[in-house]
Length: 549
Image 1 (cartoon, rainbow, N blue to C red):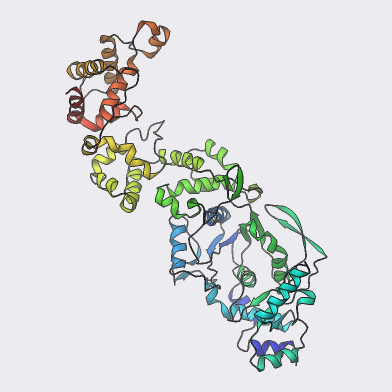
Image 2: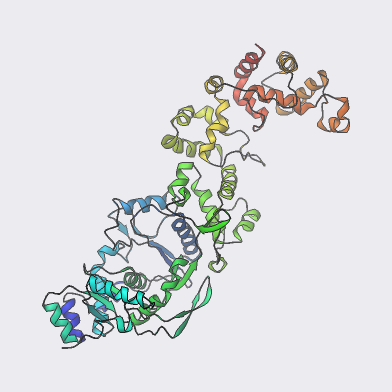
């Protein structure tokens, strides 16, 4: 009996690997095109690090006319959650990222290199496992859970490396006949890779991000096919990346230690090794120390957090690009109106040390993104968010025509308003523009320099009687505010006041602040003239008369 006979006994129906090599040929793409993948497990929510990976992958494949695919790694079926694939697809789609190939929902896929679910590729993995068995580079292992536990305890007691290797690989040296006999007797087994590595020897690997790294060779005889016939992650990813013709594997540096094993698997299988690009994970600063952003501790680790807060998808992607490439921020300053897709992403400029996740910075990016939106975009996105998360705001926005006027204040100017960093800010930013909401609240009119009630009444009554005309253009309106200031003994220009502050009780800005606070209940608002134009004559008179009364 030989290796081929043993392989036929274990996988009698497996096709020759030549079948799959022909079925999944090299891709016909332009030179330098990047083929990369997002390969999550359907075991929970999408992590912010996973979204960052998608942003980078999509940018790279777009700029090289490559392919970005979604592969679902579902061989650990005990940990799967219901509708896990759909959650992944929806989560990434919500950020405006589309895959060229792969799963499009729980059961459907697109592309010619599938199936894109590992659980549906069982026969492919078995074909390549059979190929290794035929070469004598894999073997059946009959170790029981008890044997493995005993081995682990001995290794611990002796303070040596744990694992199944060298003298500890008990079933590695079984003859073909002994192995076949055990299989025929019905003994349970798994299939292990037969490593030819030596831990005493070093290999050097060039990582696109981290540069040259030296490792000990892999010598572990890892499991490649489990008792249920499904592969382990390490084996499946090697077969999949080869057959899907992946050129670049972009992943978090928690996988760096797997490089020696993955390189040996690719070489033993006769595959061309993809370029590995290990980026530092997103970090969080806590009590002066840095740690990985955590699914358990940090709500912002889940991409759903950003939807709940109402941070636009575009802003989140811009911020992640900022983390991804250190030169993105300066590019954005130089190209404020360019699309993010026009930025030339460079993998080698990714951080080796790990970027700190900064929510303040993210909201600052978001302010700038929202500032560029027209009023229709702000209205549509705010309403969509409010329907899910804020019924009161959704009700306020029912009058679309009026709401567009409100949201259009100081929008489209050379210096647009930047008081909104997320859709959950909108209600507070526009509340006072809605008559019923304004009068329903208990308003505390906090004026600034001018505090005297009688003086405030005098300013407001004089303004209504002599200077207020809703049809005035902006220049005429402001000239009248200056006239009002002058009539009441205030400096009509701020610079006049600054030159001789002792001469005046205040200036035109203090007068306009009284009008602003009286109409909005706030000292800081967007452009007062635009606010008044939207409020209209009746509302302005009603608000001022209420105060005068």
